Amino acid sequence: MREPQLEAREPLLDVEGLTVSFDGFKALDGMSLRLTSSSVRVLIGPNGAGKSTLCDAIIGHVRPVSGRVVFKGKDITSLPEYQIVRKGICRKFQTPGVLESLTVEENLALSARRHRECWRSFGRTLSGEGRACVNETLELIGLAEKRNMLAGQLAHGQKQWLEIGIVVASDADLLLLDEPAAGMSHGEAAQTAELIRRLSQWHSFLVIDHDMAFVAQLDAPVSVMHMGRLLKEGTLAEVRNDPQVAAVYLGRAEEVSRACA
Ligand SMILES: Nc1ncnc2c1ncn2[C@@H]1O[C@H](COP(=O)(O)OP(=O)(O)O)[C@@H](O)[C@H]1O
Ligand SMILES: [Mg+2]
Image 1: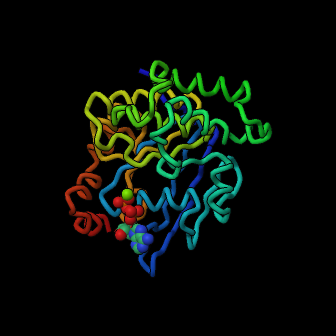
Image 2: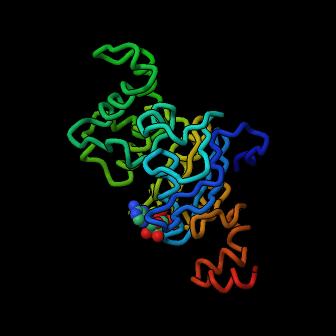
């Protein structure tokens, strides 16, 4: 078991009362969330709760009508997406993904070359720092022995780990992962949870997932969204035992809001 997350840690990301409207429909309706550095947060909620829209709004893909996103103390709400990425937020599926005709190592080297620090070197070969980053990432994702294998020949789970490695090698501080364990076997999902936990020593993760076994393995605080807002935050056991959370998952949200009115 790892140490409990420290509340006193510096905030990395503050989402403050974010509202996103699609033709009058509020996909986010005053959503707030705080993430600290070197942490994992799980985000769950029924379909349509606004989880993907929240990631879109954080990364600057959609614009809120009100509210703010503050990252490392700076208001990034109105920055263009590419500047937000360069400030250190990465959404996994927005990376080019795995290039199947390149080796595992080449995939990571390409990403490390895009590393903000490496941009200064402009060299054709990787800098010493870039090379060290590739080697370290290969170890972390457990693919050191497969470094010369074509990425297209990896098993599904291994490709996902390589994708996570690609994001890590690009040195993002905050990684937004939308269902990283989808389509994986139980064993692969468990290894993915372990990988995310290990990487959270250096990076923060916001992980959206429905698979409760996987969420339990992440062993992290859980935020529950419903109708574009934060419904509940706590440990997995706390949110699981919460009657409001149970109700929204059973589709009885209206009853609950009447009962709480
Ligand atoms: N581009 C869009 N245009 C109109 N409605 C959208 C758009 N994107 C999402 N929505 C709506 O916003 C709500 C939240 O969607 P989403 O963020 O994808 O939920 P989740 O990821 O939690 O399933 C849904 O009702 C969805 O239909
Ligand atoms: Mg979604």
